[in-house]
Amino acid sequence: QQPVQSPQAVILREGEDAVINCSSSKALYSVHWYRQKHGEAPVFLMILLKGGEQKGHEKISASFNEKKQQSSLYLTASQLSYSGTYFCGTEGYNTDKLIFGTGTRLQVFP
Amino acid sequence: DAGVTQSPTHLIKTRGQQVTLRCSPKSGHDTVSWYQQALGQGPQFIFQYYEEEERQRGNFPDRFSGHQFPNYSSELNVNALLLGDSALYLCASSLPDFRAAFFGQGTRLTVV
Image 1 (cartoon, rainbow over the protein chains, first blue to last red):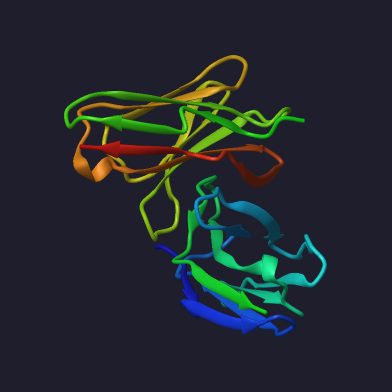
Image 2: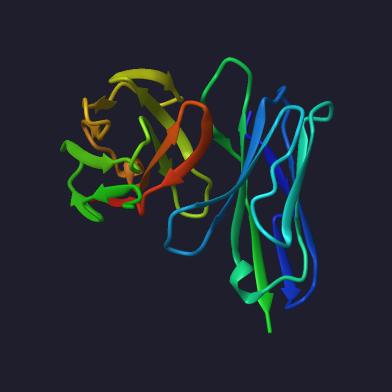
């Protein structure tokens, strides 16, 4: 039931791009994306709802394929501040439970 | 505007004891959810409160209980603590019509 994220880890140089994928075995109503830095709480990035997507930040965007029950997070021209662990959170229909994915650790080096 | 605040930030308890964690939601938010995050893992949903009632529950035993007060603040109670309950406990608040979760800094619980 827990969404599976890929890759598990990504290492980038500043300015490079990355894609993080989130895949669920259940029909999804919405997908959330969060970033968590070491020792800190997860921070909300954006939410994608059925039938649309919402861009939360510059250079960080996401897509939501309802039929495939998948979402992807796109980070372009990465910055050092992008380092952290990224989690997708998924909501099914008729539930308000947010189920977090397995996480993707992203490290950006100068 | 104060965000989500949790207390205490750190706590050490002995096996078998009981613990209460507290959460004040972000201003204007009326829904509170609790999560358990073990080291290196993603947050696991414990339960959610809305209008002082438990609305959703994850796969956690009855030792985990909660409460929401009229001012929307919330408490998480864990009875008969086990070593495996050691984790970061996160509280998140949200609105019913915009379900993005805003997290507090968490309470680090260590059971010895």
